[in-house]
Length: 234
Picture (cartoon, rainbow, N blue to C red):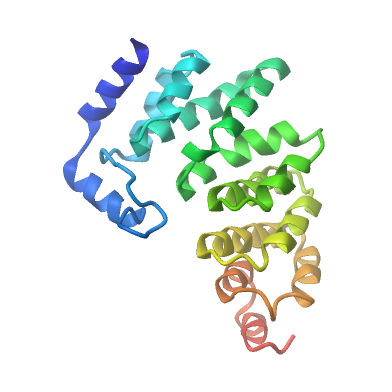
């Protein structure tokens, strides 16, 4: 019953024009990365507000929402999981993490990954083996690879960069632009905290990195240095 209630409230919040705009923005056309996804047209702050309201619903209800064909229902489910994880004990966090990993086929757009991986996968693995990240990094599924690199944002915030740099090395030859952007973004975040660490990674790799990845990684560099990287003069 609670799932039906939530779905009805989401539908009431929907806006047709916003739904059409979101469908274009998240590339839902034939052959695009979000092909077939359905949007109601709800702004993220409204979904975050609902997540706080329904943060105490059972995991079974959250998993039902996560399995929805509607994008905003899946986003709501993930935002609730993030809130729950941050307030839960170790046993409950383990259940949330397990639920997350068994539902990765539903975490199937960049906003869904970015809103959740760094808040669930990263923190859960903080004091554990990082092997799951490396399995995700070599997945044939683009979103699982993005989960791998985005989960390391948690470590970056703790000023621990080794996992980010290792996974970036694995993904450096990835063919997907959305992976290039995510890797470049995380390298930039490393550089904000430890510029020598980022540059040490870049120096032996930047010439073979996808251009988008490199541009994202060096975005905050001084203009002259950025141009030297782009021209291969470092």
